[in-house]
Image (tube, helix red, strand yellow):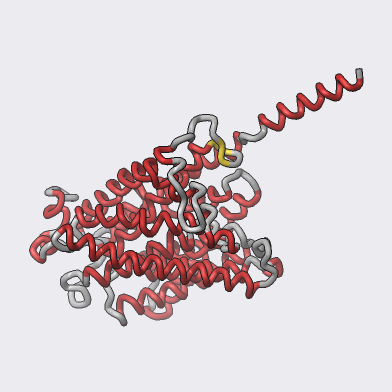
Length: 425
């Protein structure tokens, strides 16, 4: 009798354990996070960037973001997800999940449906090419932008994603990149800088004022980015747990610190704080805390944000005013530089002595973790810079040049590329 009861107990336990494999709480949170990250691109980034360009180029930015959301989604479904997260080798995945093969309603990735995980990662593959738009805004052909983004996804974004999150060599080394310091921000920043150098400056850059046409839209977009970033970083915990909660807390503190230090720098230098400086500092703080958000405590969050505002502020002035490089919407000095310092500072503030959660398995010291972080940063910069340059040159050959004509640039991309106007009178 006792044996029968024992078997019954074990049977019930096994059923319970199987039922617990899928977590409703985790699934609900990652579904919510997915929606938040998509909101960061549409309409968040679209409005943020759209407000920063001149009136005649507003629709072109919105169209680029919309089209990238569409095309990147389909490519991610076809082979992108498989190449990024398929088993493959240390450098690239395989085609075992091409066209979402095996990703049915019962397939799990940890405690959540694999369909939800793949969709969550898809939103990252959407926003990263969209960020690059800020580097060549107001002067690149729509067709060239589209072809470049498609090739760039496969040659740059997907390999680095696999290296870091898909079981590749950087992840195996113990690289700390919780939500995209290398994968998203360094990649986007470096690509934008290379694109700005290859295309050249906008006509009149440095001699003709090019103020944002609607800071109101930019602030609205920035607010959506701030809220959406809770899904970006908090969702990267892939669970509704304490790690997600802490990631959200340090994300918010990073944004607050970035705003404060950037605005303070402006206030000291020019005597007045600007709205544009406030929202740019916010993005700098958010981008910089991103790689560290799952490994640091509140002290690390606010310190990283404060550092980000100062460093990114001076890098923006260096690139735009000293080096005279027309990275139109400051993608490299804000996202690229933010990703670099955030990835490196993750090694510092992950220390338990500073309120962090400790170093990666097999790494026993801050210097050991910092070495791995530096390798990740350098590898991402080199890979992205080299292949972005090659892709741009190849695309230029097949599209008759990357830039619109001088006459079309003067007219504005809304009319010359889309035959529409954002504001009809």
